[in-house]
Amino acid sequence: MSGETTAVIRGRVYGAVQLRHTERGTPAARFTVMQVPREYDRARRQWHDGEPVPVICTVTGPLARHVAECLTDAVHVIATGNLALRDNRLHLDSAQVGVDLAHHIAYIDETLPGVLAGRSPSQPPRTTATTEDAYRAQPSPAAPPAAAPAHWWRSPRTSPATVTAPGR
Image 1 (cartoon, one colour):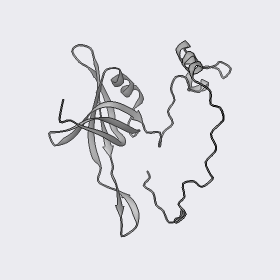
Image 2 (cartoon, helix red, strand yellow):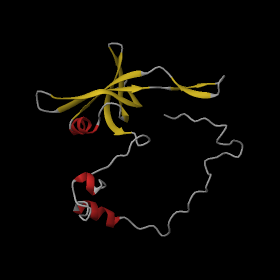
Image 3 (cartoon, one colour):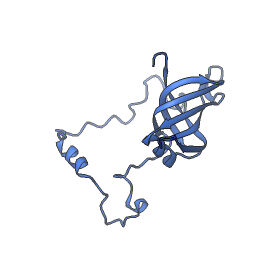
Image 4 (cartoon, one colour):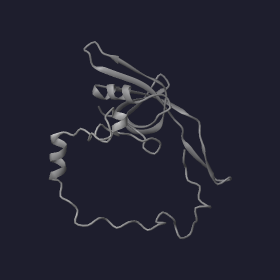
């Protein structure tokens, strides 16, 4: 459709994720993300939280099952999709949803520690042939990349004590 606004939102899940199924059996999940904008106060020279903005997110298909299983209240997420204003509320028909790795550690099946997966530490993680074949097909790098300098993020004009970055 034309006229849709694609947006990326970042915030915390507020409340529980609701999972339902359509008449045809397609899973659909709905959840609210509270996006809190960061605002810079020039007089105080520091960042502070703005007014929270609730965004109602919906996802369908296999993504809905994954969202319902993985997300709980207060989990930081990043979601992309088509943004619309309906009944004075922001709605995001999400195309992608992920855990914000700036705030959480996420594991996939292949990287899940044995203790958490219910395996004894001596058992190797399960792998699939397609994953191994894809890994073998990649060329190996000639030399490891050089390490970044110890303080590469600092500007010569500023010091960490004078810079206040937006953070959560």
